[in-house]
Length: 633
Image 1 (tube, rainbow, N blue to C red):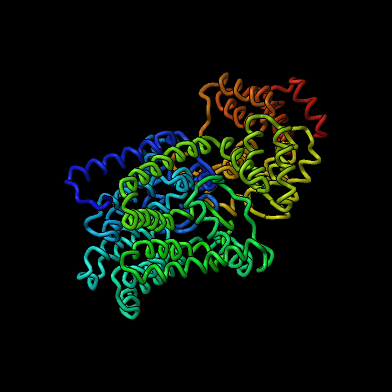
Image 2: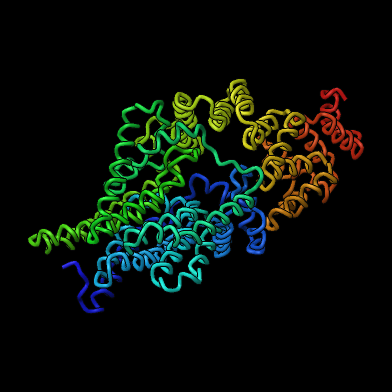
């Protein structure tokens, strides 16, 4: 029998086994690298470098991301990342993934409590099994490996904590204490409005009360959810952009996406971290009609199953699946048509629906009863094995994006990001080929144009590089397009043209360090002490741990360091080192090399000043005189 009439030690053994299964499923994910939005939320985010910033997490949404357009208000997520960083004062992925796993185990406990109330007191063992199946489900690997999806985990804990209080103490609902964890979870992400929908489903389907009573029970949740949603939206950065396009096209496509998610819930094969699903062109498209048919059948199934008390857990689980999909898969268009981490909440409904279905089948077919729990265990182990295999795809950027190009071959962003991994490995021809392939599917993608420009420059195709980079600016005048074009201009000896682009990148992304540190390096190289001091102060205000001091402690060390940078054509860096060198000894050679570095950067007047200073130190220094003459000074 699946009903839990066994002694307590059997339940304890099952719980320990479930935990071991979850740990085994994710034992190979701790060293997986950062991906997607992790770059601007974690890697490039100076706010998480110090726990002293924690009060700002709750007052300034810019602390969530180095990209203002992505600066949504999620203070608990940012705080958790700051704690992870503080454990080793580095971007070691191990503590970040450890926190992910701990949060999943907390989710598992809360789910087991909810499922226990859903199935009944005699089915604690079955509740543990359903919770374990959810936790090891291969469809959750994106939420676990994509660290920025921690918002799903933390908000789920708040959501489940609130729901557990609601269903465990029905007589105390009038005190509204269950709304406290809901509000706390909303500080990570705000799926708070759907809580009221789940409450209605529980009261109507599980408690079997009238519609009027279900709606009345949901009023506090609706009011609180609406108020929180308004308040949290006001806390988003002014520059924040939700993304998305046509509401009609998005709505028309989402029924098919629901069908896609349902298939992944039942058979999580062919998972892709970045699908190539696109908006459907017509309401009569085959996929659109299939999706619509699925949604209609789902609604019919929920209603008919709810009529039979014995089948109420299945009806409620399917209702949970549908209700929790509404925020991301309905009328509000998001940037991506589908994302697998959006399946995290809906799977919490599918897992008990599937497990209880097995229980019902075993009741109606006694000959199958002895095999029912074995089937559940086999499914759980199979899902855990699938999760371990899927974790390997998330190991590095290269393994992930190679997998995307194989699973979603028409995904332009996937091909672009795979090309990035090739470019970072120095395989520029392979990178160019991947970028060109991506352009077939995303011809007006500014980030792709930036990367095409970078790889063209690396291949020595400078005219082509400028064409790509200027096109990126014309497509999207954002921080990246200005920064990378400015960096290229500086490298090509066009520093005067580069400075406005670096300044614009810093303006568009106030907490993003690269344009500020590059501008500081240029200011020091030019000898502009006032601007350098201002930039250094601004950098320290953003990240107190940032180092803007000289990287050498003697004339010889500074000069040799500058010479190595000169030979590598890193002229701004070289000029900074030469200026550090003359603080120890004012040699004409160092001033001459400052002039050469500045001339190479395109700052001709500053270069002339440096050459003249070299001649003031030693009027007979022929090299500086010749360089000044060649400059026309």
